[in-house]
Image (cartoon, rainbow, N blue to C red):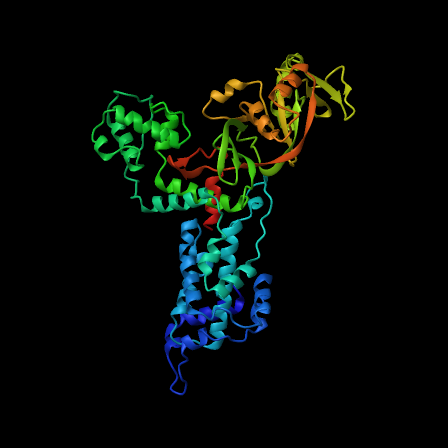
Length: 523
């Protein structure tokens, strides 16, 4: 807010009796006349304004622009509604703007200040709705998304010309239905009663059909609160069929295998209170504003906390889904955007630094035969000169390459795309891991279940390469590279909450990103 505005507001609102007292020699000024009349704007008032605001008034002939009462009130209404996006109306000077609009007497200078503040609030809100309040890279080092550009002044000019700020600002929101669903989710949670009086579920052993007791009664309370169990089925402490069915529904909504049995993971999810879930939704709304505005005609989307890869076309149609394994919390899979441009059949694996330090070196120090067990060859330098004797005191002086084959950690196929983290999609030699519920198990790359099915999709424009051809290439045992005639966009993203036909969906915040983001949004 410009320094001049701050000084003026201090005088205006700290001393209201002085403002409203009219000197007997002065005539009160009609606010409807001045607010709705183009007034000259002194360039000196822009000393602390952004370049965008200065440019707007230069383009508007150095005159006030918010001279229509309907436009001003429409903007105030949209700012109030920013709460539905998980944003705070106070960040857009709502209280001050409402006080200005309510003034019955106002000077020309105050009208100009009001106009500038309206412009600043519109610009700020448009920017936050379009690309987020915070900068992703200010929060996370491993976050590499294409920047989003917005011409706020062009939007402001359109909003004032058409007298519809609400419509223009509405277009700044992400178009995807999931964002709209998150807004509905936040509204739904805000309307739920306080749940702090529902007791904690103390987990001691799995609870299942025909069990009973006080803990079952508490479980039923939780299930009823979240709408998974009807009130008439929650009147006693018996774990009956209705309870088991409700537990399955709850588990499905939280990415837990739907067994109908309350295990420790299910109990933990049941214990999460409404306000913590609101925190998740607000954090996810902000991430959606960071994410691509449009996924285009086709895209591969990896949702890291959901352990799922989805093929999407036309920005909304889901063609296929795959289970994936993602990076461990201490070896996070990065958030990024790129395009798959190459497939590698029977890939070799060059051991990355993190795996070398945390896994390979400690195991090899205990037993140097570990290298041969994993079919890992050791080389010196980029020219890959074979090393006869490994020096355990200088493990980082070597290059370690695992030969192709069924034993290879990358499996039989790798999907390459340019990025700054040396990560990719790939097969795995541990396919049994896909049976696990929690699959944050890799060193940062994303492992895909049934990767050759995914390869067929990526290659569908290449008439010379089909599944039979891929199988023949695998059978040779030789490393082969397939450059793609048409690249496929890939987005690795991070969503822990959304709403779909199954209701509110939540996933474990496996990298503990939600709370920190929420706290920074609220500062």
